Image 1: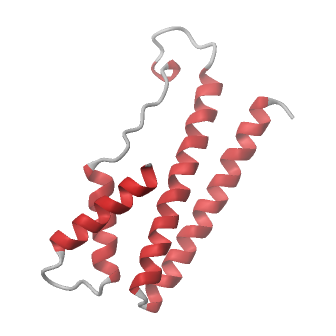
Image 2 (image 1 turned 180 degrees about the horizontal axis):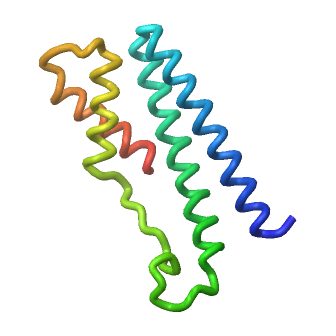
Amino acid sequence: MTVKQELWREYRLTWDKFSKQLELLQSVAESGDRESARQALLEVEQARLQHNTARDRLAQHLSEGLPAGHPTSQPASQPAFDEHRIRGAARMIWEFSAKQQNTAEADWRQAEKLVRSVSA
């Protein structure tokens, strides 16, 4: 199997895993089990990062040989975590908590921990 075929295979496998984790998260969220939802959210984030890594490796391989300075010839950079990802995780935590009032700060702190642990 060539490097290109292996990268495509990895890309598809990580996408399948990410999709399955999202489906599991949706079913757990509907159950109302907050702790299971948090665990499922962590697994979705891990699967998403694995998929993004596979995507970036494939893109890097496909862009080899492009002229210097071409926008896609530069390596993809990915911050360890950012406000956007934390905000999304905090919102999901809040939604899984039946949208309880006055939990924004606690939800944000938990989301920060979640995003950092997945990024580590």
